[in-house]
Length: 200
Length: 200
Image (cartoon, rainbow over all chains, first blue to last red):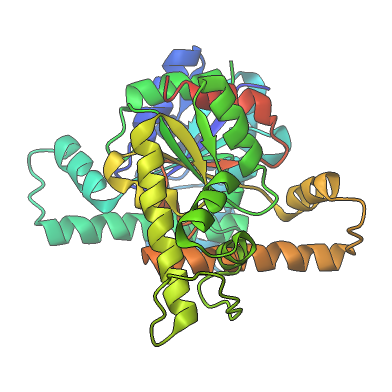
């Protein structure tokens, strides 16, 4: 088995931690926001805008164009979104071509489907996710429980929409993944050591 | 972690093979149809009927009563079903109490929830499941592809109904399991060796 691992994850489920630890355990590259930075450079769009599109999905209406040479079609926002996805797609393929790696998010499971990566989906119950969010949240975030729950649901909804739009598949649907891992109450460190054996 | 492992599985996904191999790998007990036999003895119902109820779900209308001392309520079929489920519940708890074990099916993930078992759900794409069914089917089964697909869907529908009825939960819903494993194209032997490490 090659060492390409893609990770889809519910917000607050620890998918990023799984990915980072897994790449450490396997001694391979880890990609997440680095990808966004690179795409931003290529599309000549502001990094913040790319980040915004990727977090808010393809229907985001915030046409702050920074690109100079970028082609503007009939629907500039949709064109930008598609361009970002195309670049993302090429970049993800390039990264996976260059070296073994863990890629978190970015529909990488779909983009790299021909390479047969190990496709993980990380999820957890709402309580665990809220607890994880509370722990990692910056001091200034004073969400009530209700607000936090809503925030988590919103982020997932956007991820789901984004994934669905560009892949035509359902985000989080078991059949799109090789292994779905529930991190509620799990020791991620131990878990990762075992998962790593699947690709070693 | 204790060594109680429960396995939910889609029909034809290899869940039984995973369970058997896992129990061998861990050197612990394996329970599946043995449970039915034992329940049949306790409820004094014919083994075949118990099998039928467990495979066809709680709404099966086939009141072939063999029991002599068994109480008959207003709805004898439903009473029997409930009695079977109660006995099954007690038996599964007893088995898990007595020794480490792997239990396939029987809503064991729900019945044993207080023991925090490792809850696996085994699934696969339709093509793989059909292939597996073809391989293990007795010579006399000459289903067309269409019939086989229908048969697989029917068995799963019954399992789903049964699980839902007695647990109030959705069968196959990720959150009810710790790990969901896609066996499409997977080497179950290798997979099991890794999974075993989660409980070792």
